[in-house]
Amino acid sequence: MTLAQGGEFAFVLFATASAQNVLKPELAGLLNLIVTISMALTPIAFILLEKFGEPIFAKQEPSREYDVIPDDEHPVFISGFGRMGQIIGRVLSMHNIEFTAIESSANQVDFVRKFGNQVYYGDPTNPQILRTAGIDKAKLFILAIDNVEKSITTADYLHHNYPHLKLLVRARNRQHYYRLREVGVTHIWRETYLSSLDMSRVSLEMLGISPETARDTINTFRDYDDKLINEQQAIFDDEAKLIESAHSARLELESLFDADHDAGKKMDLSEIEEAIGIDRRCKWMESIV
Image (tube, rainbow, N blue to C red):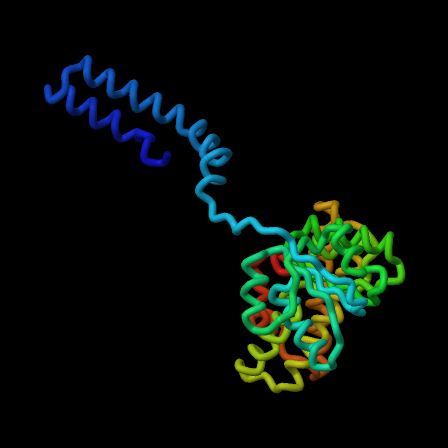
């Protein structure tokens, strides 16, 4: 589809060839028309390719039936057995806590089973599958799927239909966090957030900051960000107010670190910002969204 389109340089080339009597004017005119039509048809061709061609050539997982998930009355359900789900499952296994893990990717299921993990192939957001597997007897549900919309829909369903169930949910970003809070979820972990903070702490130490100061810096940042994300819950869908709040928060955080520095407790703010990746020249929104 890409190679079928002619380019603007063809017009220059044909005009020059015609002027040098390499091409007859009639032939040059016909070639110009062909190039023009090819350029006009290319957007339509790409639409057809995206709608009909790509699904044909896209790699599809082999079709197979969902596993029959027994009702083992396990106290824990893990929905999504990817990076986070596997770690949680391993930690639970250390304490001999039984759980039911459901994963929607057949390839992922086959892969983790090679390492001795007990996981079932199915749709972990399907209410019927959850009921069949004994969700009504579970005490804890860990929602760790990638799809944001399905995550919110499932959390909303569980919150309203199984109020006894403690729900722990993985959020991919702040917007996902806010939407989960809207449907009643209270225990939320932002993806990569804790890892980013830990990497920031190590970065500070490698830059010559004492371990104590590095820990204090990260704890201060984390406490402030936890406070900020709760405050912005009410305005997260209003971009103008969110931007205004973000700018105010940045100034407040600067003042907080400057005050600590003046008291001899913290390092200089510019060094902190450089070390943990907050560039004064960048928009504050880029560092919190």
